[in-house]
Length: 441
Ligand code: B12
Image (tube, rainbow, N blue to C red):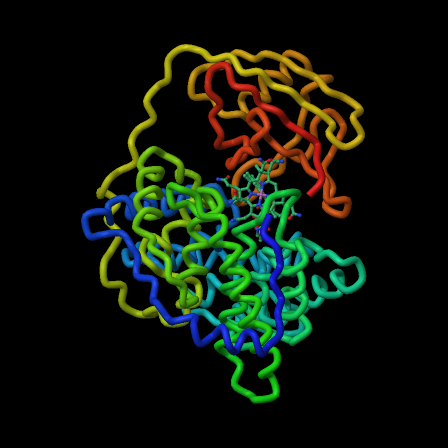
């Protein structure tokens, strides 16, 4: 597990002189852009169908589309409008709106040249015509920090706290030193780990947030904070690089995109040709068909990052995304069946441990395996899911439900290794042993 490495400000100053600025230049080549366009198409198609079915837009996708070099302006404009309407609706109707979600909405709006503090709100009480999402985000971040102060953990998680600081900073809002320091302390005290696993995703968004804050500090009275940030950034980059694998991934396949963004905004000497090669191979074999996964990888494939969203062109989109380029391959009908060994286990209070063998058609997702098991033996294998931006998140099995306050959840493993995909995307192979284990994080 990555460890903290806080040192004195003087040590940072000395280190800085040897920390040479080596720009990270890496993106796909001209002939590889077809693969990026294919991923952009996955996102555009998912947004167009979610718009047709009236479901909420995904801000992470709009952010990725706006940062891309090819555009579908109609989809982007439509998404911005739907995000604005949805934000206002959530506030007015008191619907769930986590701090990180508000932050992503603000980032996506900004990337679309819309000011989040002037979000059109026609039906607002008191004759007001706009809603201030920036103020809302400040309030949400304060709630996160208050929770850290009183309970030592954020209301949501440090990934979202990082997104909050990033979004406020990108809107030019000075973030309080206390918020920044809370993030720095967590980065050094194991706050970025889930169980034994260091979250490269969280560290990467924290790097983007802290880099933004560092760049915004001008006043001499915040120099101490600036030095603390520099020190934290060095530690975070070291931790991120420690998670590099032999095939060039950083953390796992799905944290690599954010990690590349983090490395690209700091002066890190890192050769990413192997990383790009592996990402393109895995994209080609269908690992980024989930639009949320596509949205977190495409900016890095074109060497773009979230700190650039204020520089985007608001009027002219140079190249239009041509839907006919590399159309999505029609799914081939799989043949035959596979057998999967499935076990559900209460790994906290050891109240149950039940196994079953399930036979499903080749190409079935883990979700289908679970549904089949629940059909055969509902008492042991029934479960509930909640839809999220990544797809179905398993909330309970039997009567045992994960709980944010107690930091419990259903973890999925193959053998003893945690899956890097959710139940909706993961496709088990014949004879695989899948375990759902009630765990803490
Ligand atoms: C925090 C976190 C968790 C927490 C969430 C609870 C909490 N207290 O916040 C916990 C530890 C429970 C968790 C669990 C899992 N996670 Co997780 N998680 C994250 C992380 C770091 C941040 C999510 C977030 O807050 N986003 C910001 C908010 C604004 O967006 P949101 O959509 O509202 O966030 C919610 C959902 O993302 C949901 N969620 C979190 N993880 C997952 C995973 C899946 C598959 C789904 C459907 C939903 C989901 O919880 C979030 C908070 O409510 C992301 C990193 C990333 N790059 O996105 C990984 C990430 C999304 N998780 C991932 C995975 C694989 C899982 C697990 C499947 C791991 C496992 N082997 O069991 C499980 C889910 C199992 C299940 N029960 O269905 C992958 C998904 C990759 C993919 N292609 O699907 C990511 C990208 C990390 C990675 N690089 O591998 N996770």
